[in-house]
Length: 566
Image (cartoon, rainbow, N blue to C red; front, side, top):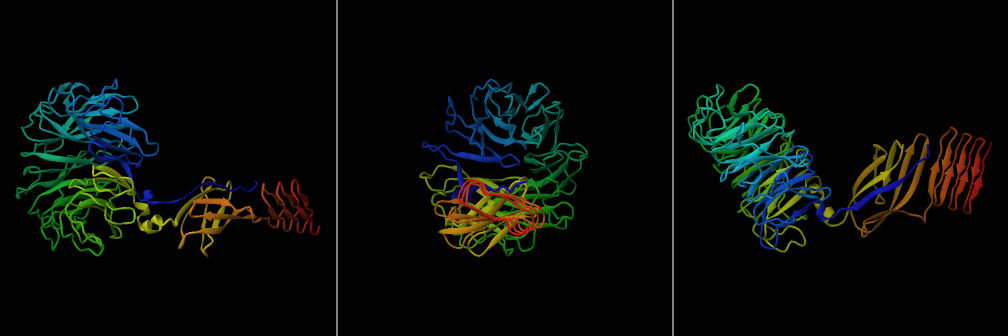
C-alpha cells in the first residue's frame, strides 16, 4: 500500500484555548448562571433572563448549548414549544445531554400547581415534558427545588416541602427520588429503618448509577449518636437502605460546625463537602472543602495550597470529577496560589488530589487578574473527566468583554501548564493523515523531535517552541520497510503547517521488492536492494533503483533515473 501523508489539522493555540467566554451577559445586565455539564463536556446547561431565542419573554429560562456546534435549545418549554410563563431555574443534564431536569414556577409546562415551584423532566429529542414532583397523578402540595438527574435520565432527585408525596411525611423539607419510568417515588432522607428525618434536608446529589445519595440535614434521627445540632452530610445507599454520616473526623467524631453542599465520586467512595467544623488537626474554623474516604474513614482538606497549607479564607461549592481526583471550588483565601491578591469575594480553583497541584481558574489566559467584581456566586462545574471547567463571573477575563455582567466561562485544564507558551503563540497542535503507517515522527526544526504510533490512520502531535518565527520541520513516516521523509514549514505567525515545496522529500524502500510512488512534488525515490518499481509521478524527481531488477517510471517532469545494478 502506498504511503500517504496529509495535514488534517494544524493550529497555533491562543488564549481562548485556555479560557473562553461561552456566554456573555446581555446589555441589560441579565446574567448567565449555574452552568451544568453533560458527562462528556459537550453540552452545557444554564439559566438566564436574557432573550436568546425568538419569542422569548422576560422570565428566567433554562437552556442547553452544544459547545461543539454552538446550537442552542430552550429547555423550559411545554411539549408544543410554548415557553414557560414563569421563572425556571436549577437545570441539570443527563450524561449524554439528552434529558434535562429543572425547577419552575411556570403553570403551562404540564400539570404543575398554580403557584408552587415544581420539578420537570424534559426529553430534548422528542420534546416530551413530565411533572416529577408528584405522587402518581397528584401534584405536590408544597414547593420543590434543586433537582438532580441520573446518568441515564431515569431517576430524579429533588428536595420538597410537600407532605403528600409519600404517606406519613412530616411538614419538613425532605429529599425524594422519582423513577420517571414507573412513576414510583421514595423518600431518601430517612433512617435505615425508614423513619423520616425530624428536620429539613437539602442539596442532594447522587452517583451516576443512582445508587448512592449525599445530602445535608439537621435531622438528628437519621443515624445513632447525632447530638451536635448542626448541619451534617449523610450518605444513603438506595439499594440496601443503609445510611451513614460523612461529616465526621477520621475517628468518626462528629463535627462542631455546619457541613453542607456535598458531592460524591462516581464509585461512591469519596464524599466532598464544605464545613467550618474542625475535622482535621490544625483547622482554623473557616469554611473549608473536605474529602471523606468512606472506605477507610480518612479525611483530608482539599482547600489547601500545593504544600498543604490550609486556606486563610472561606471556601465553598465543590464540584468533582467522576473519579474524585479533580475538585473545583470557590475560595476567598489568598494563600492557595502565589500572587493572588483578590481574596474577597472569591476565585475559582482547581485542585489535583493526586499530585497536590492547585491552579486559579478565574483569571485571564496569561494568569493575570481580571478586572471587575466576580461576585460571591462563582459556582463552578467540572466535566466528568476533569478536563473542562465552567464557571460564572462578572470579571472581564477575555478580550472583547466590555461589561460587568455575569458571564459563563469555560477553561480547558489540559492547557493550564502551558498557558504562557499559548498566549505567546508558541504552542502548536498538528494532526496528520498517515494511512497505514506504523510510526510517525516530526523533527520540529528546533533540535527536538516527537514520535507517535498512529491511531485510525491519524497521528496527533503537540509542541512548544522556545521562540516564535518560521521553523523548518521534517515529517518521517514509517510503513513496513518503507520510509518517507518530507520537509514542512511551520509559520508560527500565520499559524500554518505547509509542505515545503522548495525542498525535496525522500522515499526509501527496504531489502525486498518495493513499489515506491512519488507525489506531485519533487521526490527522491531509493529502491535499495530488491526488484523495485519506482513511479515518480509529476515533479522533477530522482529515481535510484539500487540493487536488483528495477523498473523506473519518471512520468511527468524533468526526472533523473538511475537503475543501479541488476
